[in-house]
Image (tube, rainbow, N blue to C red):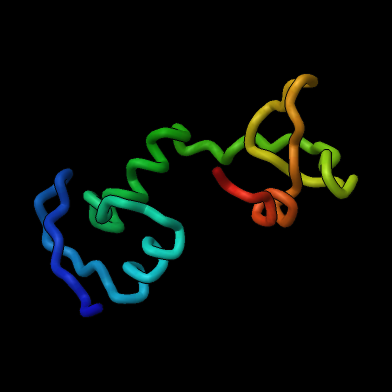
Length: 92
């Protein structure tokens, strides 16, 4: 795969979708190319958080029992996993 030129749907700037990024997208099974340039992606993430750091919650992993931090408030009726156990879980 070669680097590709894409146009940002937010600002109209042409940006490079590198071979490395394409490999990452393929590895994660992402079906669509990025539609925003890195600058607009970062700005969008910041605006969703209102510039505030994410609130993290301490939990005990339902699989290994290790303490972990998650970016959501867990509920009692659903299992919560540390990042290692979550990555190891089979996906449907």
